[in-house]
Length: 380
Picture 1 (cartoon, rainbow, N blue to C red):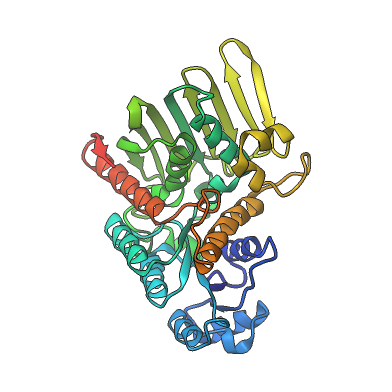
Picture 2: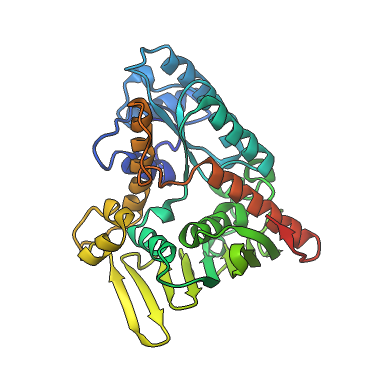
């Protein structure tokens, strides 16, 4: 594993490094962590890298790693930089022969996402996109219960991701670098809230239900400083005639990380929330509510993916690090399958990829266009 961005003190870089090495079969060997070459090398040393592989820039890193023997160089690069640089760095890494794990959003817009997806196909590298929430075993269980027909045909989906992070910022004081680029269209693209957390909600909906969002009617708003939206809601038209509602907000006062999904089928419904990820609730019009708990034998029997993603016995809570680790495990096992010249299994391929990234950027652009054009329906 090599890394670009995500240096000392960066929350997301720490999560990626811990999760990638969670199963003990990935070695962190190289990186470039700052736009300042001196600081980048210093941070590499702080993270325990060989000084020769703590690079001053990502360009220097690619040159240095490709100069090494094949069995010594990094196999994949994790990109943990702000979104504005994802496209350029990922394309260069793929072109240099490296597999890529990229933070979301994949790019700033759909055109970049589609070009990057074409690059993945051309180079035949493995590309992963970090939507961590589909790594939870109970989310995989939900997906498999829907797929096997336990709920019956899906009629309605409600997904929401309210945060109050922008209500905790003192806008009269200098902003942190992260707070600055989150409000900068040159870095974050055409949307703020929807590119940041709305794409997570959309990805979760499509993953759990197996239904694609076909059209959106959105209303976006800006309540705080900067040119980008920080709040939004949309009506959704899904495949097979299903309907949905999506809400995402950075100004939901008092909320921390309120990701939730409810799926209403013809026979049953399910509900999941990230702040209680150990359980999945199933309800029915004619029977008591069921609570499915991660780690139980009946969960493993119902979902091979949930069983594969479970690390601890029941009643020993698992959380975000384990969910990200599950995504890394499948991504890395797919790389190993390619190296062994065999076809990856369906369980190994169970991670968001470049197609997920294209879907996400098309969703964001449709949301922005719908709000801009007077709250009209737009195809995704």
